Length: 204
Image 1: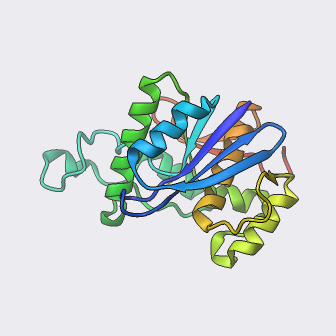
Image 2 (image 1 turned 90 degrees about the horizontal axis):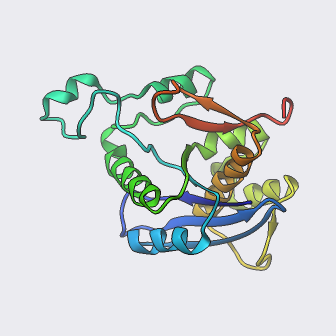
Image 3 (image 1 turned 90 degrees about the vertical axis):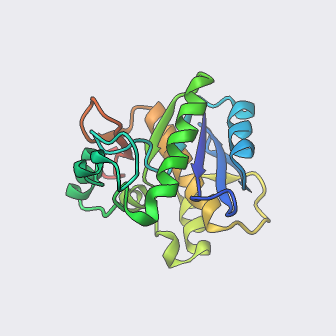
């Protein structure tokens, strides 16, 4: 089984992290900038699942992200966001001004990749790291990478210095493997986009 993890930025002018992880937990990571680079990576990897660290839908009832549209009365928060918050995590609301570009880019990736027959899921690496006992990137890139190694992840290029975007992409890809193996919890109503979380190590 192959999982592609993507930690996208909100703009093609900033780097995004990518990671291809197999079910032996061997991973290769890199960064990309453009939409085409990222979509080409998905085509070439032909993963069983693509796990994206971005909102992949608008709040129910929203037709767009414009604040001037009548649909704006439906708010900026999805049911999945609220479900994750109730579990004790703190996602950024889907249509906060600082999140709009990322959300629209994530939705675009989902649409393009699903059109090519790929399975796409939404993940939240910060919450996944909390569940797995892995420090978040704010604790330091070296600590995060070491903790991912402790989960059994083996980097194919161990001598290379990675950036945090890549390590969040590794976490996303790991959640993708958990999804493929049925070791996950889906937050949010089943008739909307759900956020996929790994089972905690205490319950998996």
